[in-house]
Image (tube, rainbow, N blue to C red; front, top):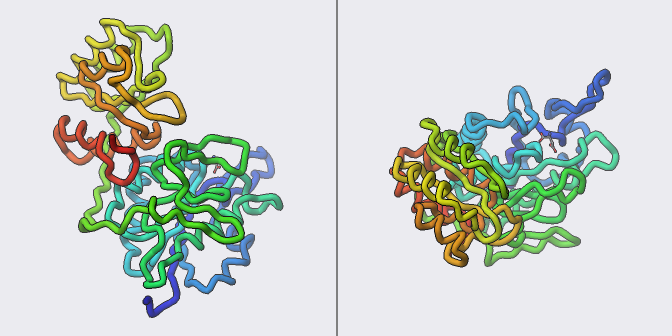
Length: 345
Ligand code: ASP
């Protein structure tokens, strides 16, 4: 058992939750953490020690970058002796990317890192921000009776649910339930009581905590559509500063059966580029053996991204390319679960 009250570090990166409306232009812009604290007096009611840290300046999450992911991870790592759990306040627009990035960078941390935000600023009466923030703090502080953290993973808390962070997609710009985890059930659901889906929660890692904070952004995502020009695909695949390609294919991982496509992919693969197949569908998985239109991609060297989200696949590819691994090793790890992000076949 811990000898002290649970200590939760709230890191405010920006996002709608802490924004106010500009009096002249009417646009929303991020304000400081004091604005948030002012609107959530309930923060004093927790029997936890609440520590805070704020990005300087706080950002709209559309301005997020891999450098800022690393900065965020560094703040988390540097507070390991002070915090039992973390709440990251973040804009919803790119929250799924940041959650994925953190899940890879912080493997082995063994502490809850809960991202949350809101669709309406916390200063607005109908805000969803207050409930999200309060639930997120509860999740970050929750422990088993023996003191072990209940959810030692990177998660996203939004609406009623707590999701694995690298499984979510922002699915609504309108509803308070802004996120969906199409291919993986919620880790917890908050009603009158909080119900944890314990068998799904990743066990505390056995591997030592060795964070890697480098990303290589020499990647691109291509969404296929009927009629896509071969010149476009060939041009992109031949670009010398592209090392990884996420191909967003049809259905269970299918693409047009055109010789130019397989030729261009084979050539790119031979040059050491990593081409990963994920589906344009929200739910379900790539199965390249199912149709001839998928099989040809595998023959050309494409690896399956399984049921990973686009946010996760892009982030994971940048993360692996940033580790200085061989193309074959990157291909192997893209199909392997590192942080519960893919359902392995
Ligand atoms: N544009 C905002 C952001 O992502 C939207 C939000 O927070 O919901 O920072």
